[in-house]
Amino acid sequence: MTTIRLLLATALLALAALATAADDALPAVSASRMVEASASVAAINHETREVTLTTEGGESVSFTAGDNVRNLDQVAVGDVVTMTVLEEISLSLVRPDEPMAAMEGGMEAAATAAEGDKPGVVLADIEVITATVEAIDLEAGTFSLKGPEGNVMEFAARNPENLKQASVGDLVVFELDRAISLVVEAPTL
Image (cartoon, rainbow, N blue to C red):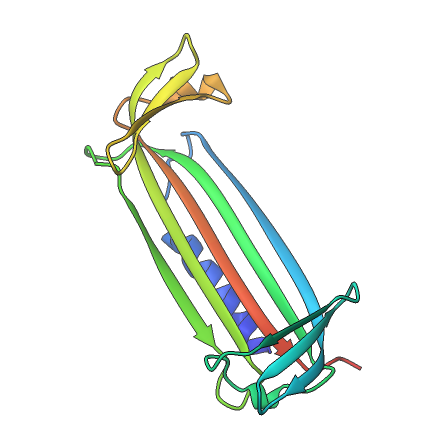
């Protein structure tokens, strides 16, 4: 299902392009992870839409595929179902050109396999929350952020040296990018 994997890569690039650009001199940190799991179709009843998968560890999972699962008729015993989950979280300090209020927002995208292909789907979303730096205490190594709902919380800096680069009124941008793909492919021989 090359099309679905291409869509997954495209969705991740689009999400990355939407990310708020931070000044390289200001502190930023990010982490990502990818989890992939596969199972084989052990049984399928196309009339009742009941599917049984066997994981690589030998466990069986049975479910009834909903009406939103397209192209179920293309699935056969022995097909391999692969799920990939990619997540990235980032935190960056941004110095806006003019004062800005804290906010939150996001976007979602989805794509499914073409009619007649094996079933597949890609789901991607991005969540962005900004908070305004309200106070910085260099001696205590703490800072306070005001969130989108007006709540103010104090935090201890993991690296207190970063506080010297921040100013009251700066924004801290929290971003979570996720992409999930579910692909069904004929087994490779």
